[in-house]
Length: 236
Image 1 (cartoon, rainbow, N blue to C red):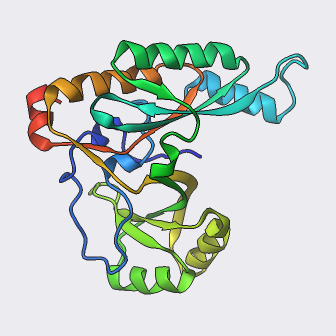
Image 2 (image 1 turned 90 degrees about the vertical axis):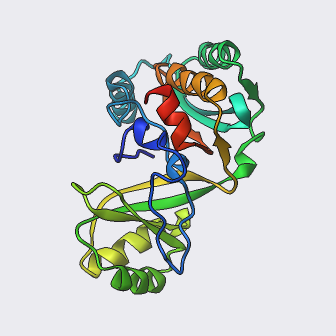
């Protein structure tokens, strides 16, 4: 599950940085519903190499690689889901816990925040799209919602649906002539936290940076928005 869209600063733009659309199907997510990514908007190269090696059977027979999910709360009550790929769960858990402790977060048990999210399938469409046609085709395909991308240099939209129907949804839209450029699973929050205090936003963003810097971490997903005035106060 990888997202190739805007890097992390786009998620820090506050709840008003993405224009509201008048979609009869309401968009399910704010800016920070999408996985928060490293500035390269991708997974660390060494993690990609490990994943490829694992799939090709080239890792040593003594190395047991596994995917692990960690959950917790950051400053201000922001819910965070951390997805990792590791050969040493003790090391990874210690690193994740240390980051939470350093920046006033609280690492909890699996399930402590995931109930605040739904795991959905997401398709990325690119091109100058007609909203009325997209609405009609998305409904016909069985999609739950859609959301316009706010990048003028890369226009398009994201279409959301059940993960079990993602392949069918993609095929339907491609047959209708849409250019589907990516497909993933994504945690979508059902509730969001507005952070409008710089004293809270600063350690929260530092916590995200610390988590994303860990070699084993693949994705960090949050349910918060940072107010525009707080962004300006932080100089971001």
